[in-house]
Image 1: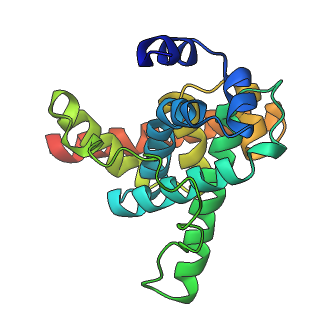
Image 2: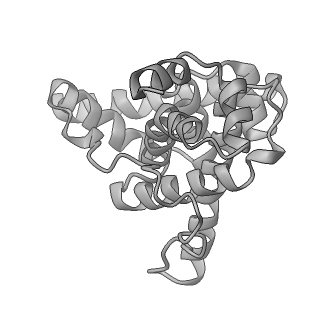
Length: 203
């Protein structure tokens, strides 16, 4: 079968179909899943951690775990909230380890996984060098780091990753009402930080 005829159907497959094929060892389906979700996983880790190298490690580890546990995934649900939950857990694990050892790194025990040859994270992506929005991004970036972990992650999930309230609730394992109230408080706090930053510049 020519390559072109094999690639086109994969690109048009639903997530559920891709997961079913990937579970059966279909490498093309695994690669398509990685292609669709590696950048969002990296950006989420980057926005939560604020460090590109750490974000690459976390995203790589999260993607490996995603594929390792793919058999547990409910194909009736969207992939991204489940993957983001894995990313978030890896970020929290990193924070916890750093409280014990300052220079600890992400555990890479699973790097010899049989899927490690997939390009799980695009290392050429660099949000920090996006010149078209560098100035605004820098200010928002610094302001986000001043938020609490809970405030930062809920803003990132809603305003950067564009998840629905129900998907955020699934990712964070909290009620939708809590999502709404926490998001309101986080946006209010971020607005105050940005306003204070602007006043400092003007003065």
